Image 1 (spheres, rainbow, N blue to C red):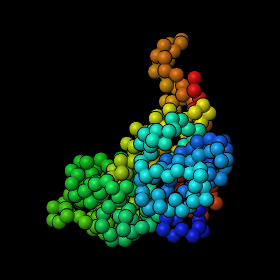
Image 2 (cartoon, rainbow, N blue to C red):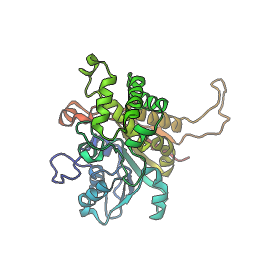
Image 3 (cartoon, rainbow, N blue to C red):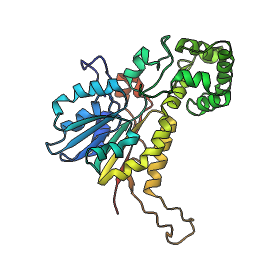
Image 4 (cartoon, rainbow, N blue to C red):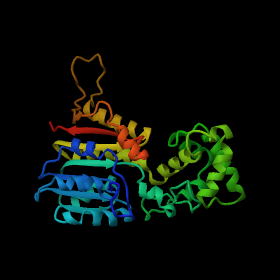
Length: 321
């Protein structure tokens, strides 16, 4: 994912917590590292810079535009970098195709990139009137249009409440269902108009764009972002060599909660009752949480890139028994 000021205008993204994440990966020059959310290649570029000719970087992304941009960005490291179009949830299988069974580090920079937000035709934006889409992988069939028009009122309420954390979730869901009975909701502009009608005028005046939370919720649902994270972290930790680290950057409280919980369980998996004098469940720790509290961006980074404001970095180190 790109740093500001770079020439690639097709996929320009400011890598959040770049220095902090690279530092915490503790890169070994001859190691094997995976960037599971390649984006424009910003994190991968910094990893490759630190690798010797014996080191290797595998970059994974499901977005075709990211793959193309990162390929150009990492061209000078052609001998070290391999780019794969896939979802990081398939990391083990993709690495097996390359003859790799274990790695020394992995980084995940979750959420939607600046490029995806700013490209109107991708349908992530609530600032222009474009067709509802929000797919990170254009090969998948489910779109935001499908979610908005086909989900039940209860399902819409659940995702807006849980993924968007919007206190007007019930009313927004009700307004969406009512509106689509008149006509299919086709565009972001139509959806924004419906959302605004569901939120009190006084509330719309503060706290940012009134559609922000609902759009976030629908995007997470379309791309199954939380399910992928929840179902993948244990396996990614299992891929790590002794001393290998996983760095995860989140932008949403539910993402952060999942990472925090899974890291803790891997550090202390014992399920024995507290009163037991010794562990009898046999579950062994797989390593340690390096970040007892998440690392967050400093004031300077937030001023430079306001989208970094909600970012949190958590780090886990594998220790094989």
